[in-house]
Amino acid sequence: MNETEKKVDEAKERVEKELDELNEKIVKLTSFLYGRKLTAAGLSYAMKDCLEEQLGVMQRYAAILQRRLAIWGKTDEELNRVNKIY
Image (cartoon, rainbow, N blue to C red; front, side, top):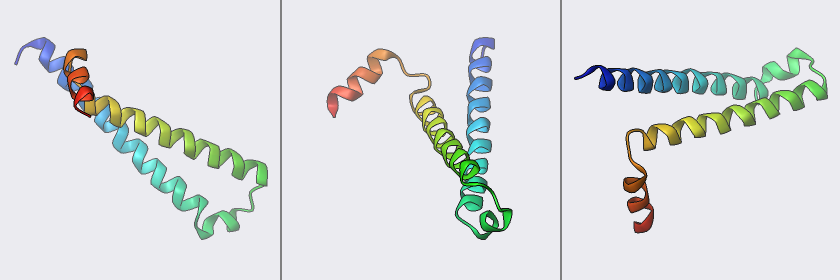
């Protein structure tokens, strides 16, 4: 493995790690928002709305990271070929 391939592998590993960590945070926030702890926290409706919006943004970001990983290392030509099949 040459130096460039090693850097690409390391970059992909960082994205995978970031996605794993983000998914953990999504699970925790989801559990908080839709569990018993939310009621006990006594948060304002404005804060609940912010947390729900934050969760949505986190989920969108996770979807983008998943898409990046799915196409990692593929050329535009390869991706276009796959899209034409569907």
